[in-house]
Length: 64
Image (tube, rainbow, N blue to C red; front, top):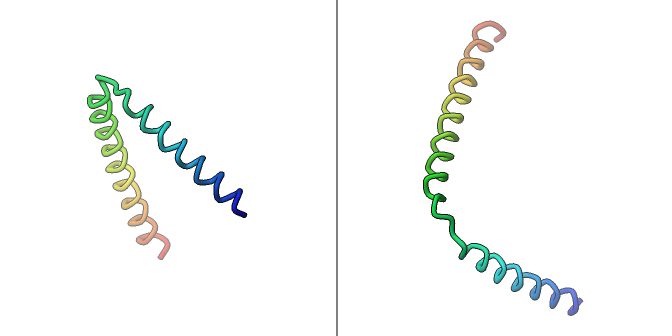
């Protein structure tokens, strides 16, 4: 049991260090890509929510 806990701790530390090293390498166009992706996702959510509300309204008015 002590060996398993030690391995989990070692793997967690190695993972944390690896993540921080990889995250340190930034992309100069990252902010523009994030802004565009966030905008696209927002529009997708708006459209899906509106279609879902319309579908619920049609279901309630015809089948309930």
